[in-house]
Image 1: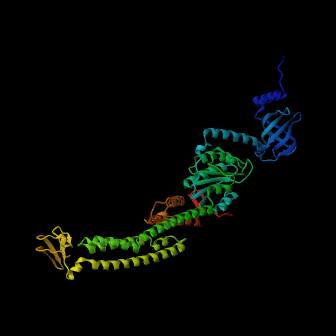
Image 2: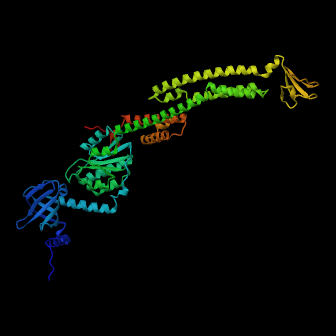
Image 3: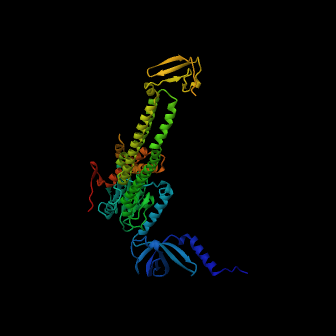
Length: 443
Length: 79
């Protein structure tokens, strides 16, 4: 039994045969266009000569590459390959590029250069440099009369205020590539932060300088990062592949490089608000801490402390006055320290925005502090006078004496004294030592 | 050199970074009020410096050419 295959299999084999046959791939064919139909997906037509014809298709991507509109009966040279459409068993010529005057040669040159530079690593992602966030000066290599520089200047007006340094260049025609290279090199010597290389839309011929090797290498060797903005968004040049960033248009290039001014301002505003909130909440915390401290230092607290001190005073005959005033001084300086730390004027000087509100609160707080301190001080003064009255030395001036044992203990009861014992008697201006000769207990 | 003078010499990017760092320090807390206010004052100086740069209408648009007598720059006006 011979091998039986399906129709699909047969057509698939034909397709594979076409694909393997180099004489049917990447060939230039000359002929005339007829039955031209234009669809969004591409152009469909017949390419024919006097003796033969072939179905041809030019897909959208290829259409965008040519700089003329094909018309019925137009004589062209088409570059492409034979392809098989398996479902219908038909083959067709798939056109990559077409010209009337040797544009196809340019396409080949473009592809060859792209391959060569790609292999050399000129398009490598690893070589792409980041753009400066806030460039001081932007260099622009373009025509000084075109829309490009106009668009860049107009767009940059509402953005981060960078200086613009234009290196005028020819952007089409013979010698254009050389002027573009010179511009890139000149701007690098000037130390610009970033360079835009661009021109407006045009035919593939017009854009050609940006497909030249010297331009590609100048972009690659530039110290400053390069943004390309060549032609329309659909045009790709070698310069676009080498550039660190490709912008769709000159306006786009300026927008990519420079942040919007309002956007930056609102970022600054938001940082300011965050700083204000942080300080404001810190002040609030401190105020609470102060209030708690303040209440602990109120008159009641001072009174308690004085009570404690007066108890201790009973056991002491010396240094009492200085000790007490020392305590008072300490308390005062604690007040002063807290008061100065929270003095509103210091904080208010620096905080404009929310000063009014805080000021009112701080004023209230200060008034309350002062009044509390005043009443504290008055209370302390009163207690101090009272304690002054308790000073035993004052008592001595009124004719009383203070008797101490030899061990220095103050004696208040006859029980504590034995006959024959030596005692010290303190008078207002001196001390005498006496021996006890007699003791009588009072009932 | 006062902090103002220091800031005057700072680039916009450095100022923005410094401002952001100060705000983060303030927000992190753990510092006393005196220090907070000191940081806040610095933040205000940085903010003002950034605004000054943004408001600077002195940006220059020039064209540069290589001539027989060397590099020449002149103001460039859009038509």
